[in-house]
Each structure stands twice: as structure tokens, then as C-alpha cells.
Length: 263
Image (cartoon, rainbow, N blue to C red; front, side, top):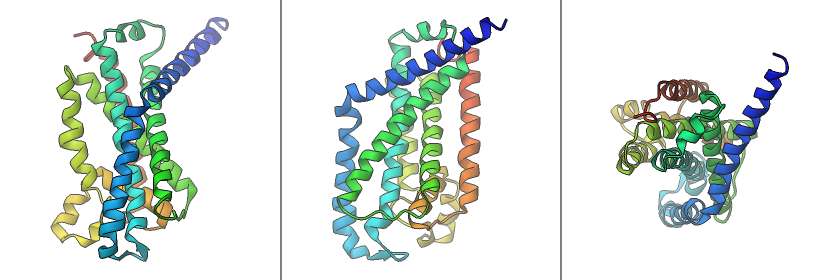
């Protein structure tokens, strides 16, 4: 038994590294689709909202408008591309009929989920780094807490990588992998306090905004930079951690049941 266990451990380690390496090589191979669009989008946001409109808006809580929205724009890119990487990659494996090779391998489902989630985190962090570089062309970034910045971006990326996998597991065609990002993720992101403080809204709108999980992620990330937050940061971390656990367990259970992969 002692000889078998190290062998299984090596298989798991090699399998996990292989999934992550494949996802990373995919990101670099199609860099024109994975890295260039978010850079251009961020550039346009900073030119239009930061430089042009921002001059008319004025200061926000003691910071220029462009400094205020910068963390939100970075987080928006991380969330979108973490989700998009996993949903497209896993559904692509289903569509191409090579997911079966992975599922019949000796890798446990919990490790497969972990590998795909790690791939989503890699893309989210890389895109976040690219957008951060674009940000530095327009303003200086004040960092209040490096630990909060890193932990918030990693937790948010994990949550939406796993959410993307749930979408990919249930999706039966390409339309179904674009429905959630278009009609759910995008509205929640734009209404998540990226461009404004929820304290500017009327009471009923503030109440609705606090039901949006992205609001907590954006504000936790902004707190790491500016020390400002419209929500309790501890609650934000509880929501991110809880969502990550629930989504991870859900993905593993769905793969164990064969949902979306044996139909």
C-alpha cells in the first residue's frame, strides 16, 4: 500500500500540472483573444470615463475619479476573464469530445476541477496585471494593503472560475455559454460599484446593490488600494470564501454524477 500511495500522488501532481500548463499555453497561444481585448477595453475606459468624464465628476472620497474607478476596472477584467477562460475551455473539451479522455484517466474529479479553476485564476491574474499596467499610464495606484489586494483578487478569480465551470457543465451549445456572461455577469458587474459609490444611490437602490456579490468583491479590492469600502470587508471575505467552497463542492458533485458529460 505504501508503494501505491506515492505513485497515485505523483499521478495527481503530474495531472494537475498538465491541466494548468495546458491552460496557460492556451492563453499564450491565442494571446490576441485573451490579452489584447482587455487591454484595449481598459484603455478606452480610462480615456473616456477616467480622463474625459472624470474631469467633470471631480474627486471621490478624496481621490480623483480615475483613481477611484481603477481598482474596479481591474477587478472587472479579472472576473470576466476568469469566468470566460473556464467556461470556454471546459465546454470546448466537451464539444471536441476529448473530455472523456480526462474523465477516464486516474485523476479524481476534485483534482480536475482544481486544475481548471487554477487555469482560470492564471488567466484572471495575467489579464489583471495587463490592465494594471494600462492603469499606470493614466494614474498612480495607491496601495493600502498588499495582502488585501492579492487575497481579494485571488478569491474573486477562484469564485468566477468555478462559476464558469458550472456554466460549462450544464451548457449544451455555444449559446448557453454566452447567455450567463451577457445577461447576468455583465449587468451585475456594471452595477457592482465599479464606476460609483453605492452611497450615492437612493436607499432602495442601495438595498438592491447589497444583494450583488460583485459589489463586495470590488469594494474589498478597492479597500486594498485606497482604504475605502462601501461594505464591511469582513463580510466581503466571508461571501467570497463561502461562494468558493459552495461552487467547488457543486462542481465536484456534478462531475461525480456525470451531469453534462455522460449525456
